[in-house]
Each structure stands twice: as C-alpha cells, then as structure tokens.
Image (cartoon, rainbow, N blue to C red):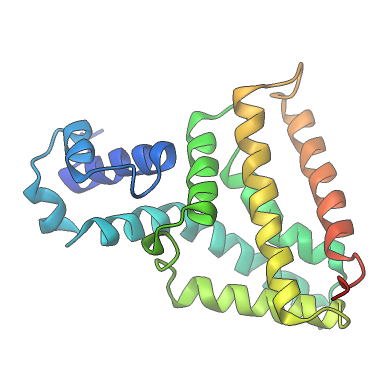
Length: 209
C-alpha cells in the first residue's frame, strides 16, 4: 500500500486535533507538525484553516449522509409516511455504523461530531453543503408528516438531539466499555436500545410554551 500523500496526512492530523481540541484550540502549526508537512501546505491544499475543517467534516460525514439518504429512500419506497421508529432507525443507524464501539477511529468520529455540534466557532457550523442540507430537509419533512403536532423548529432540535446522544454514547463506550459491550451482539443490542429511546424522545408531545 502506498503511503498517504501530504493532503491525506493533513486531513488525518486535522481530524485528530479538531476532535480533541476544537476549532479554536487547534493551530495550523500543530496540524502541520503532526502531519509532517510545512505550513504552506494547508494553504496550498485547502486554502484556509476553515476550509480544512470543512474538508475534514465532509470526509467523516459524507458516508453517514449517504447511508441516511439510502435508508430514507428505502422507507419511502415502501410507504410515503414511515413511522417514527423506522425514521429514527434510518437516521441514527448509520451513526452507529460510522462510529463502531471499541474502535479508535469511531471514537474520533464521535468526538468530531460532538465538536461540530458544540464548538462556538462559526466555522464549525458553516461547513455543510447541499447534500447534507437536502438529506436533513427530507428527514425533517418525513418526521413532520409522522409528527404533525411538532413545529419544524422543535423537530430540528430533536433531530440534533439524535446526533448528540449517539455521538456522546459512542465516545463513552470507547473510553469506558462495559463488560461484553465490544462483541457484535452487544453492539447491535446497544443500537436497538438507542433507537427505542430516541424514537420515544422524538414522539414526545410538543413542548409547551
């Protein structure tokens, strides 16, 4: 196997450091030092630190987004109005697949998603592209049909909650594994538990003013 090129080394280093320290807590010099590259390489390959974060986020999120899209397509091919539990499974399932328990890469992906959701830096919230926006809007519409009593704003809040709960759970499992949790059966059991919990949370009555 050929060694990774400079661009890939920078992406790998940036993913590791952004996940650990956030956007503002990570300097370009720290990234290039870890990657074994010179400072100019970030500007050459990505243009800026913000564009580097966007590239890191897309590399991690795009496979998850593609699986979420495929899951929703499969549900809608069977019925125009899938139930909440199936929508949650299609939306949350790829997060478990992309962040497997006991896997350091999965834990790093989890930490990166938590960082994207919680980092106060504007750059951490402005990386999404049309694919991510389209999938989010399609799920928002499907959840809206299944839960007509909820406002779009509260639906979107609850969808962000699915991302946050799943990502935090995957980080916790990696750092403090419980006995037997790393075998495939237990991993699938955790997935079922999470989907049951998240479906109940999504289905809760609208929050009063």
